[in-house]
Image (cartoon, rainbow, N blue to C red):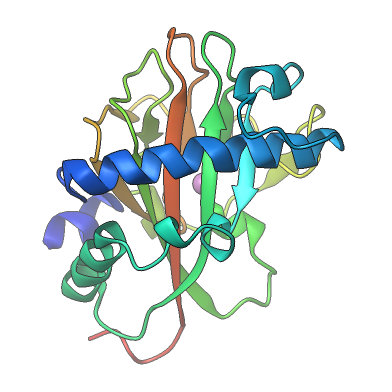
Length: 226
Ligand code: NI
């Protein structure tokens, strides 16, 4: 897949079946309610997603597959692994999963960043990320945007954002983002990107939740790549 090498990302359809998508989505909504409860320090009510999100522009649950078996060994993961092998070669392991939820109408934006900026500077890992939409995702609901070719450059300077110091934002003026490409997706579609590919997601201004189920694969950097 030369396009991945050239652009630093791909847009993919049909990462799972309608049946699996429905079962993932059902478990996912419970998982997000649970994560929102943890974040707020309150009681966890798996039926109260919206109530639990009063103060959260987004909810991120790390490694939900540890807690919910329906998120393990999915067809989505199998297809991602097969594609990864084809595009980047072997040696990758599933590193982490994330449920990243943005509530209707006011889910916040995810600032421009490179995922590698989050890794320790001495990190020897190569990371590739799959981001699957559990419903249609549009520009309005906060799809990902990528800057083609940015994976070929260096890791650029980032800073923590005020609202949440755990979230990094690319410093102003260090990259020309005018050629960025929005990647809307159908339900069950996904994007895959390299760890230096600059990306951003807009706020969710639609009337529906924006659910993304993310798989991070990693391998030790070295001579594996052919
Ligand atoms: Ni990212």
